[in-house]
Image (cartoon, rainbow, N blue to C red):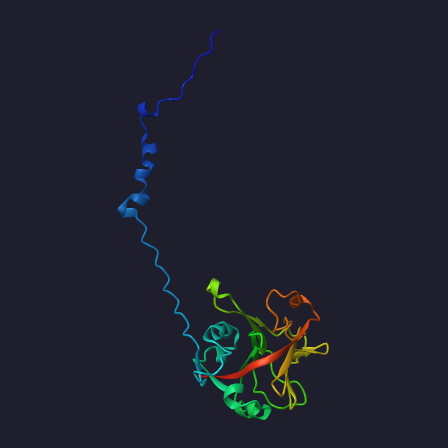
Length: 246
């Protein structure tokens, strides 16, 4: 018995039934102007926040805080400080002299401050404190305080400084300690998150329970960053304190 040969039907010789014709892409209701869907409304563009204005620093003064760093610190601030249109320089070593008493007097009337330090290796770091610096035998402050460090980018990458903030962990309440001989922010286990001497020459930074921070004066890829007992000393190049204006 011979095998019958089968060939694919020639679609060009077949006519489509009405139901198939109606499902043809050319007959789709979406292509019918009468059934066309109206274009989706695009959400309005979100307004970009205005850059932080840094006021009060002389043009020829050494610069620690920059507009790029301020813009990245702003989202981490409490609402009142976040909405401030400008930051005012209330103390700098260059403009006001190297004196603990002068620094405390300059910021005595402020409700909150940004501390910015540049060490002699050009690393920039600091803290937000939710009360003015003042002499106190014990720690004071609130849980909105935090530590921060800026990661420098190479000019070739054309990237701005990136900032990392270390927020309150809830493990203790060692926020701010100010003595005639030093200032400390964050503590626990016998170490301070950020500490500097009253002569404004030297300081140190260690991982502390208050903020679970990296040593602020270490580069981002340094192997000691993730060591729980890491501590690093630094020499102060410049120091600034900034307050907030409405």
